[in-house]
Image (cartoon, rainbow, N blue to C red; front, side, top):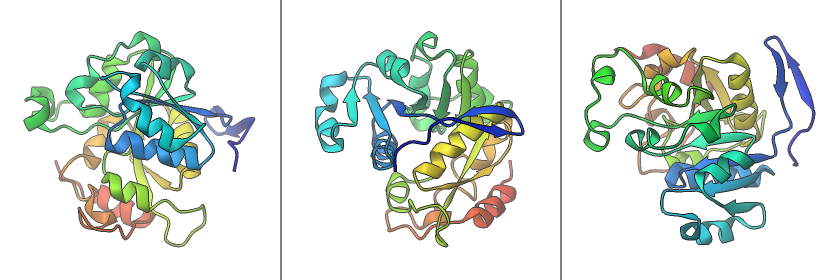
Length: 239
């Protein structure tokens, strides 16, 4: 099914529905999985990583003619929607200017053993999404994909209306940006649960009830979690 064209009128205003190109900054497990789902849904993808476009030749070949590789700036310039999927400590090193005006999906989680200790996250005075939004001040950041293991993400995609369709939580400060991301997730096979602004994305972080386990045990085939299950798990989160 080709990408939808035109504009959708929603309560919050005009929302773009003619996305054709997804840019990925970071092409690891989550990034490559999102790229595969996007290509399968009819999108073009532009992949990038910190090691250079030439290191992505194998993945581009696997994905076929709808995929290409470039620098992070090239991926940003080409994209209607950008997925930033690098370790949290590396997100601060990505130049913000090429992403100004873009809607960004932030997939980050905070892992102190990898990212180093971040006091503002330790004391709960901010969230990972807010930190990323602060860095990319000219962009509109939406948190998504951070609570699901990449193998489950790859295997649980279902067409709209399927009884066993899974849902993913999203958080963001811009309602129109969240609707754009919701449309993208719908196209690649997922319903969404809106958990509120970026200040609430702590509810979906590592070790919360909605992290990984609703979709099945880590390292095993996924069983899926619909909107009601995800909504209940999000509500169960405690600081």
